[in-house]
Image (cartoon, one colour):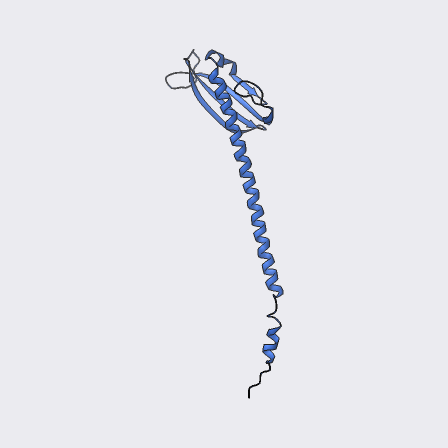
Length: 150
C-alpha cells in the first residue's frame, strides 16, 4: 500500500507556494520604482520641449507682425525702423501686445546694393530688414528679408 502522507520535503515547500517571498516583493517594488522614475523623467523632457515649441511659435508670430507692418509702410518710412526695439512687442497695426510682455522685437533696416545684397552706403532701391525676437534677453528666432522700392 502506498503512503499518502507528504514527505518532509513536500511539507516544507507547501508553505512557500501560498504567496510571494520577500525577495520577489522587493524585486517587484524596484521594477515599479524604475518605471515611475522613467515616466517622471520623460514627462519633464516633454514639458520642456513643449514650452520651447510654444516660445518658437510665439516668436514666429511676432516676426510675422513686423513683416506685415513693414509691408504696409512706404519704402521711405522704413528708415524709422533702422534700429527699433519693441518691448512689449507690437502688432501689425502698431498697437502693443501686452500679453507678450516678456518678448522683445528688435528690427534693423540696412540699405543694400542691388548687385550682391551686401550693405551699401549710397542710396539704394533695396533694404534688408532683420527682425530678432528675444524672450527675457535670449534670442528665440531671427528672420531677414529684402524689400525693394516699388
